[in-house]
Length: 482
Image 1 (spheres, rainbow, N blue to C red):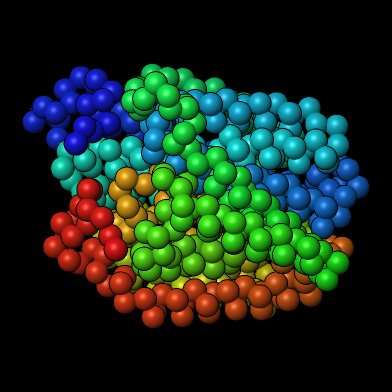
Image 2: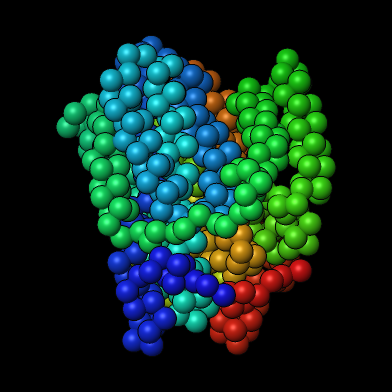
């Protein structure tokens, strides 16, 4: 089997001396993977000042959150599939350029609608980073013969969860220095750095061979991608405005999903092989856990942060700093547990931590002491440090190696579905302002999601095998799963 390293012509590919992971790839992998989570979280402390600037209530500024996740939920598995077929370099560079364009549009936006457009572009632009990183990890594992590069997987997981958690703190500092527009402008230098390291360090991959009569897009399953997009758009729009008046949206989602299933069952090279995916119950359960985990995680990121400003009376900078203990705890937990390959224990502790953190929200009120805010952040930091790492490692071990890019993209899709549910919940419970009553209703909703996450984890026996059976040998690259 020809590896990515060999196709790229990288010096030393195949030499025994080059058995370790190529560390030159780490910079573009990390930078690409963090572009989405940093933009997901940095806007949390900007929602209130943006609403004040444009006279928009939380129910309208919630579209800044939903727009990014709508675009990313659709784009991640699509771009992941393109990476599986054509390699990461082209998609990484194109996506990173879009991130810079989105940052410029956001910097100059005259109204909320243009900001929403910027977030949509930003969503599509950040789609390539994480699937590209997972593809490169798998390619390097094939080249070196090391099936589970736990250290590299940990670096990616720690990087993404770190910026997701530090985002509100960074956002608060940026707003304090230059206003809310700086939370968009920061993407311009990030994109420039991504383009430079991507061009210098990402391997070139030749286009796949095709017959002279074959169309360049013949392997892309464009009808399947279109039906997938329609399904998600209809579903996510309904989540944003659930109600009897929008009954046509779930109906459209069901019809499009049925068409998607029919198309994928007949396609020679399906966008998502539903037959293989349907038979991979452990991977499906991982996707379900991702949805539930991120309902809770993003409710903290957006709902709790808005309450700190509106309900507790903190400034944007202070609200960001109040999340700093969460960031430090998440980093510490991820660093200490990252190289331990056993997954089930991490998920069980993460599930318990989620429930505890949600319950603590019920104790908060407008005059809550600072020490209680710090305690909430610390307890929330434990599942933040465990869940994202465990979910990422689960997908790496459970997915079909030939579709690692699209499988990683689907993990993000389910995570962003959870974020969309969270955004819809925040919009519903904070219809006019993020007050304490709304926070408590949100906390009960989060507790239900956290309990479901725990139940799915406890009943999933397949988790016992990851990290325990013959180290890496049970799930080496090139093996397929039922």
